[in-house]
Length: 347
Image (cartoon, rainbow, N blue to C red):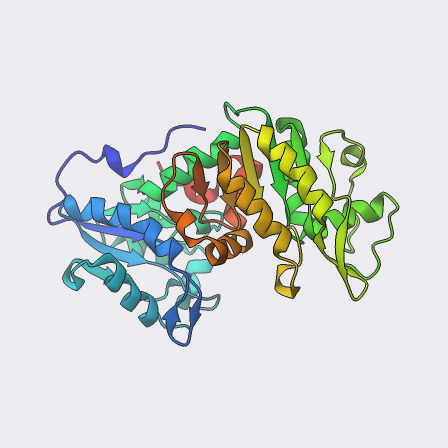
């Protein structure tokens, strides 16, 4: 993929200039307080870079799906953790409040662009969406990639560009339709593809195993080309609750541990069990093993990052061999396609 036009290429002082920065501060909130600020923290390097250049900043984000939620808890939390003066940052309203955002409306994009002199996309996690503040606004302003967006592209590209081997891809989750392209692609690129979660249930059922009442995608998919691939590794034992598989078993974890130990690149996406129903133990164990590894480690996907934040918050700290993606669906799309609409829009 071509090099991104990074904000680091802005050589001139930005004093008197207004920069529109698309961020993704769509973070979980409970009782009016932000309970996971990972995405907010990852945007701070870009914001501080632009402030040092003398820019005035307007931050654009969404919160929730329909735009009805107030940004107040996010704004309050942002100024507490960033220690940036309120006079230097303006928050635009919840962008999804406006119908033109999701419709990717040209007129709305022009109105957004009229507020600033430069546009910066630092919202990798929504860059798979063809929305006005992600795609169309860049047509009307000089546009750049933020530092986090640049880091996402650089690190996730290691899964398909100049890849280290042996390469282990650990893939979990439930929605087979979104993960099948990844399985097919990485059976070609990786040395081992371990599939867990409800994804494994689908493959096991296709192989003729009785999975009882376990969660499984009921759609029909063409999987003949992957079922007998020698690179495909499925769980060999399970924890069962009320007749349903909720997690992979100890033997499966031990088998996977041996592969982790000899791998030079480990890509981990999605939980390996039904973690919301007590099936998170194997995922926690595997995360622990992966984090201790000296391999190049890439962790991505909203659910797996949520588990990680609960068991080992310190692992969010920068580490030379570890990258944690801010994306969920965006990470999946980028790993499958090598780019995203929001990235292609930057010229």
